Image 1: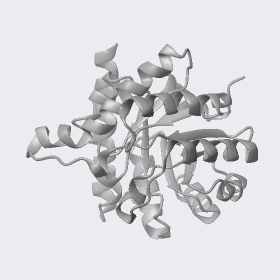
Image 2 (image 1 turned 90 degrees about the horizontal axis):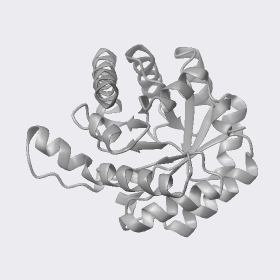
Image 3 (image 1 turned 90 degrees about the vertical axis):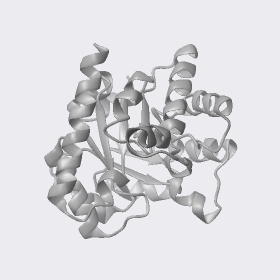
Length: 257
């Protein structure tokens, strides 16, 4: 039986129907009040999953303020996952790595594979998502995704928004911002299909309501959105953004059907 079957039923359905929406509070965001605002907005806006920093107290906080909202915890140290899962996290994620690049920290394919193997050894039954570093050439991203699934990853996530350099305003600029992660989603989803693996792909980093439909068209089963929500200070504004993302994703799914 697939480990994905251990996820809440609604999240399983969202992934299967290629309409999953994950709101990302931030891998390095340990501010309880900020995480609480993002969690409440994610739940009120119709998100399927929230991604928070790997901390048991944050997991318990989200359980309190947004009961019923599935929780993913993100980190690059597998040993941290154990306590977060014990606190109630539904799944774990290695990455994403965007926050490390400004510090000059780059994760290579071999390192990400080793992190995946260590995580799987520690938590053999827990759903594991792994981010593919966008700093790798696209063909290497595709091969790494296949290798990660073979090593025990259940989902693959893409990234790339922080390194994109859009030079246009408006919708064109939003498309330019999302181009790296969209390209990765397209290439990786095709590579996984060719390798006859069924791992869903989550397209994340640099996305907006304009580009969410493109992520689904590129082959993603869902999307992850962070700064478009978590950079806001007003909770009502956060809810409005999440709802707009939910609507954009729903439109994309209807168009695909």
